[in-house]
Image 1: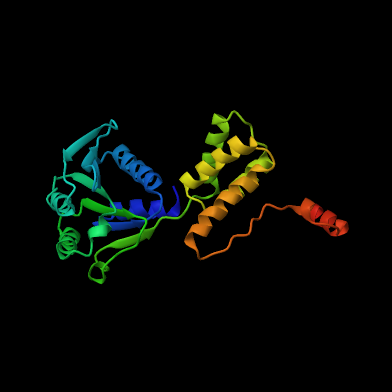
Image 2 (image 1 turned 45 degrees about the vertical axis):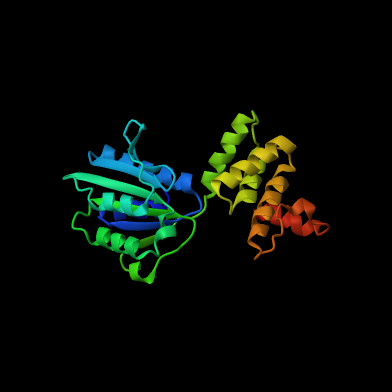
Length: 252
């Protein structure tokens, strides 16, 4: 696991009651949390894992991966009250709350989070998951914030390998590295879509890293803050200076 998820599991073991995970990748982050739950269960701990959002309400994910709807409680105050009262001796309860921070400015919601943080039963963990950081000053001392980083090279490589396998293409090492480089800074979903486009459009040929870079450029343009300049060139693209290029090759 990455360092931040190692830190997350330590915080859960250390009974941190309320955590705020700032991430653009809901699915990937939940998969990592599920991995932590499985690890705790393998250690012999009884762990109850729940997910909540404002559409489907509260759902318990059972050890056999089936889902059990607790109640259709879309109201954030209802689910926070449920968390506050979920005290089972010897059992750890982990609740992942999608975008509940959209309601966090309400006085009642702030009070409920404070009560959860102050509760003596610290085997219950409320985890806020959102792509937007929104935390009132009144709760800053009660909630621990973790920034979930974007995928690293090895994770992007796993995404690429899945797309290549589905496309029945065996990537050469150099091309694979260039494709991973082109996707750095993307989320797993963005990289997956860009790799699929490169497969369909280019058949994963030498032009495919430029296709991925072009998709990254579109993503960056959405922010309206940065300009993007593709970096897919190699020494072959540099004119002249043959002696210098030969020296660089020998030194690499």
